[in-house]
Image (tube, rainbow, N blue to C red; front, side, top):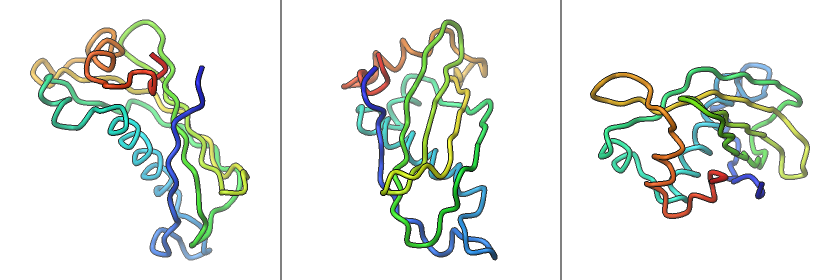
Length: 140
């Protein structure tokens, strides 16, 4: 498997809570930003997905908080897809300070929804392979 895709983000002051560290819900925003950045880097836009009649769905997200993040911290958010058989896939993500300190680990279960039928599609990796200009970013 290749190195996971990663995007750098600077923690903004308005993302912190009364204790001065990043609010728990913001970690999900960071993870989502990295996932959409990966799709964009692979050549897949929201319009391309909806043009194929599918849209990504989040079914489960687990976050393990390891170290606090503060306003001004430079962080790297990684994103690696794991494919099995069936309708779902896993996305493993790590949020680390620029010095390498792991602040959080996220695991998500996702899939692709057929927008007309309102059901999960079988073998979502096939859509990613077809739509991506660089499917290797998805480990395909």
